[in-house]
Amino acid sequence: MAVLADAVVVGAGIGGLAAALALSQRNINVCVIEQADKLRNVGAGVQISANGFRVLTALGIGSACLTSALQVRAIELIDHKSTKTVCELDLEKYNKGLVHLMMHRADLINILFKACVDAGVSFLFGERVMSVLNDPKPEIVTASDRYCPEVVICADGVHSVGRKSLLGQVAPYFTGHVAWRALVPNTTDHPDVARIYMGPKKHVVTYPIRDRSVLNLVLIEERDSWAKESWSEQGDSNALRHSFCEFNLGTDDLLSHVHEPYLWGLFRHPVAQKWHAGGVVLLGDAAHPTLPFMAQGANLALEDAWVLARCLSKTSAQETCLQTYQDMRKKRVERIIAVAEGNAWKYHLTFPPLRWAAHRTMWAMSAVMPGRMVGQFDWIYRYDVTAEP
Ligand SMILES: Cc1cc2nc3c(=O)[nH]c(=O)nc-3n(C[C@H](O)[C@H](O)[C@H](O)COP(=O)(O)OP(=O)(O)OC[C@H]3O[C@@H](n4cnc5c(N)ncnc54)[C@H](O)[C@@H]3O)c2cc1C
Image (tube, rainbow, N blue to C red; front, side):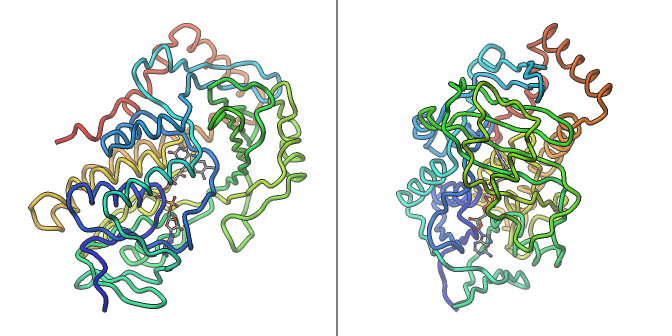
């Protein structure tokens, strides 16, 4: 049985890399095991809101992220057909001082990876973890070896093997939503805002990334089932155009530029009741996958990483530290996930009179009290996990 490090992180996604960096900065010896042969360039854009950005700043990579990201000036909710703005959340005006970023996921992953390497984190790529044991001590089983560190952090996403070991073999359920993702040229001179086009049972999110030459598109639609074995696949751009033909996405026909979209079945678990046992602990989507309708999944994984590292660097017994981590995170995570689910309903209203009334209400509220419309999310964005004792 090999000893890799005191702490082993399974998964080199945003959550796993942030946890590895945070632990290493607290002088904990860390190794990350990742099934892919190298860092993957998938996923296109990601929004990092102020609560997540605070973690990146505390990890010392805030300015690197600022350099490769754009700042969101506003979030606009738009009617999919008329293109009328139903509601505008002016972040620049009402969230002064808060940094809300739009960036390429690969850029964020690369920044985190480089910081990990500089901090002395070691990596094992191309190694798939088959199972994680936690009785009586943590043990990782891969195809080629077995490892027994002091603690195993399972940041291995929604199909987590660590979750299976803690909670039993329960497959994630299909949420009834699929997400198409694509990058297209920014032919519409799209400003630095995130636009959400709302239509019956569907919505589309657009925002620019990198040097504004590229637009990130996320197209969500409701479906009864997800028949495929794999949970993501290369999608057919004609099928995408057909499905969203009623959407008017601005001056150019943005969808005509989509060539190789990816299609994801959105799967979920309920938030785990138990996040740790016997030195094995869950983080990010492994513990609490969410629908992406508040753009908080990666942000929550960053917050988790910070709290977990802080708890583990305390001198108390390891299980006590891990329980503190769970106690500090679970309520907030559950609340944010509930808001994201509510947005699915709000964005996708089908009954025309109800949609009309809901849009009018949103319009009136954002016209009369725009500051309050933005302020309703203060508890998410103004939260500073790095300031907690
Ligand atoms: C369409 C869409 C848009 C989104 N937009 C946003 C957004 O704007 N903002 C935001 O905050 N969130 C967003 N999210 C959510 C966000 O992407 C996830 O919540 C976040 O990436 C979770 O990070 P993670 O590190 O927990 O898991 P993941 O990113 O899933 O990483 C898991 C890693 O573990 C590895 N792995 C898995 N199994 C094994 C194994 N057995 N052995 C070894 N390695 C393994 C995987 O290869 C992967 O590298 C979006 C999600 C979707 C679907």
